[in-house]
Image 1 (cartoon, rainbow, N blue to C red):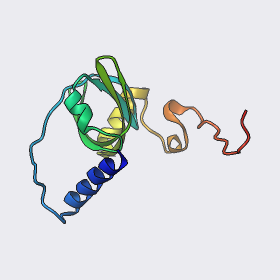
Image 2 (image 1 turned 45 degrees about the vertical axis):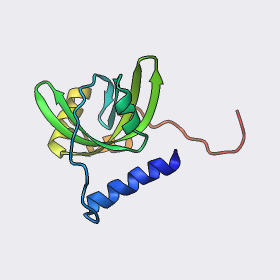
Image 3 (image 1 turned 120 degrees about the vertical axis):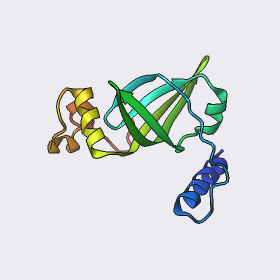
Image 4 (image 1 turned 30 degrees about the vertical axis):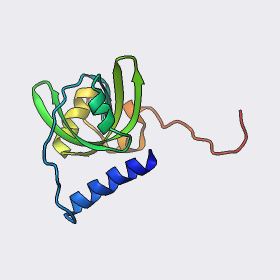
Length: 138
């Protein structure tokens, strides 16, 4: 599995850098409901097993998100993937988004524009959780 993922990442990087030309320019479109969303990513679900075979953890993809009639183009990376009967869920972290679109999305989600101090906070304004790297088990 790791070799397959590495080959996907390597092929993608070589195509993006222009080192090799893309052999397949066919783009497929999947409409999927968003289950949950934050300013840094979203969770969506889709029943397609074909899509499940292509979208592996760390796969990059383009998301065209429509929020109240506004089209927002986002480049994202699949960070989590899990299956439930009849559906596959994908957790996507946003990687590239236009600054104005980000401001719009943040205000839509949280009811206020982003502030500089938000960069130091966890999603929704809570302080980040404490992380303990000690070897002792609780």
